[in-house]
Length: 441
Image (cartoon, rainbow, N blue to C red):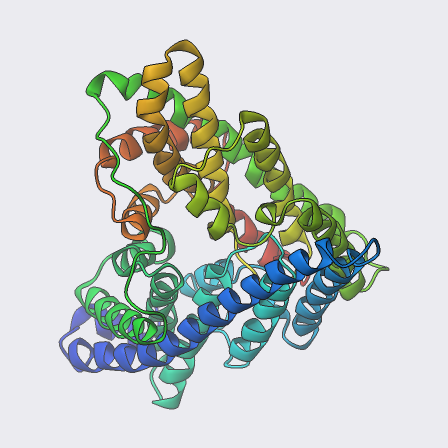
């Protein structure tokens, strides 16, 4: 950024920015907190409604199963329809935030907010697509930050700073993880640190999360029993686990890109029809096992609580969600990648614990809870390549700190393998696709 606003800010950040920019970010954070909190609350209600619909269909006769499947397909189609009105609402939105920060795209317009709000409720809540709430929430918050800057007639650099700062507030709201939200800005989006940025991020995250908690309450996203700190002798197991998850993360990233290519090449088919077709697949899977679809919070909670799934069931869940996540993303409806990866990483951790148990049952029982937790952050590290954000995110979502060192060790293994296989961070890849043409997401 070499515009005059940026140069002035670098030379003398005390001139109005150290006070005005954080205050502006705090005001924008209030709006982002209430919008993101309402989005999460409505998604929770729609998730419950969708589960009730499946239970009704199970006991309502032979053909009743068609109703939930059609509802899911219609939700996916509606989500895709919102992107016809606002193309920027498709996909995650985090890649657009990164492009704006790098000066490769204009800040998001305010109409992104209603488009992502309605489209996200349709595709994730009504449609049960295997997508995360964080993508829409981050992008809505970024759009609110940019709109606040424009309203106050801020310079171009300040508007970019506000959209980037508020993106962190959006992530914090999506997961009730304020520290991770702030870290996300500097590790994933901005990749540099200035005093004025730190102050703005602190103000935005604090006000956004505070307002979100007025809507949803103040409690960790997952209730997790205490987890014993693994012995240092188990470090090699976590290193190997991280390396294996790194390979899986590379495969997940590449599958996401491949399926995006396949669906985008169907240019003769309207986007709503493509999304509805994917919705029919997701709806059919939902009628077999509701836990396999949606963002994955319910499944993650069961895994973290020690639910006794059979190994065969866990493997099936893992395979289905491994494919369903990238397939849902290819539908081009509003939705992110983070939340589905958390559930997938937890499944990988449970499989790893069961494998350890084959060789040493006592050790397997001891390490399984830790491996499930470590899996949450490790797949995130492999795919996004922002390991510290992933670790802090999981700690805040679970209030468990006893496996911090295993998370770090596995993160090293995962990111190393991803780098050795020349796999770019997923949002870098998606940003390049977005900038390459109108179909990129």
